Image (cartoon, rainbow, N blue to C red):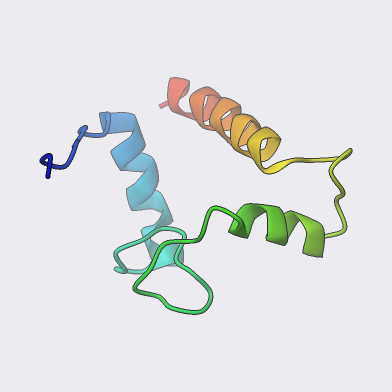
Length: 80
């Protein structure tokens, strides 16, 4: 078995995660599974959440949501 591939976070990302800590608590995952807090949100979780909010595949996809979040994150960290 290969050793885990660990990449340290940039200082800006760490600062943002620390800012989120009051909302997420001290749990292992920022986005835990709704069924089991000791597991991460499943791959299908974002898609399911988007559908429950009323978005369909033509409005928003999980990949599109991730890309949008990445763009917003990049924008926010450039201001730090």
